Image 1: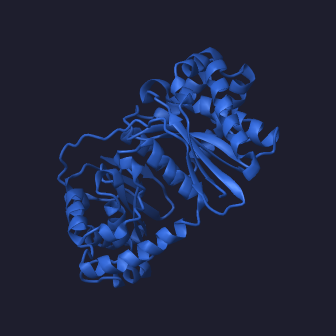
Image 2: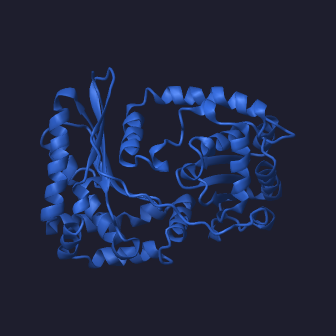
Image 3: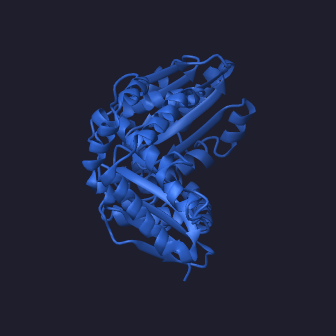
Length: 383
């Protein structure tokens, strides 16, 4: 599947998205380790010189991985198309996966892990996933801490599986001939993994901090084909709409507990969540947690007002052009339509669905999602 979006800026983007190749489809840490090699160790013959060669031609080549897929992004001036695709194929077919690369990478990845230990939001987030997705591949962070356990053989084996996966190719700017890259892949059908989060005991991580960092999540079992637009409106009113949203009004405006507080939909192929975050003074921690529970319970049970719906519609419809301004934004929308099996031009059709939505529809929708109250909290706080 190739997704094309024309643009006349003189630069083009090609992104190879390899489905079912994210961290949940490998042993913990292996997928990230492979992207690190792609990004820092070059090819077998050129090694690290590979990056200075592509930089001379203003070519950008970068690999990344999330929980569901690995992707390789290529950006280049249109006049450098042939050379850019040559370098992309080189990196794909001959990455420098050697024991020497593994040994160098271990110390580099360890340094990243060490830096993350100072990021309290990161700590709260990974602890939350460990709790609600216990005994599933989602329990492990993408940047796995036990990096020493990963072997050369495991990385080679995972690398070889990439060429048996389905791919989605994004091409923005000039239409590029990609046959030489696409022919590398001989996909086999593979079932997507899905994991339902479970309500768990709240998890506390104690360290010397001056404020508490609170992350929370609950299941949100939304049907993509029937009620995605309803979930968008509802969560905008609850917590993703900034000032005026329920959570921000109750926690910041009325009580001054936090500078920022929000809740948002986190819908993936492998899981569906309502998730949120706030940061507050140590002495307000317990009350802030109680407030979040009460706000969501009242929201789910009693629903929204007509005024809230009208404000949400005005913003979501009025701001849509801003969400389609850049080439990357337009490509991402088209990708989501394909990846999540949405209708073609779904996001354009969604605007009409939002316009027609009534208060009663939203409130009935919320009443049928009692799972929103199954909230688990992850808190980084003082000793």
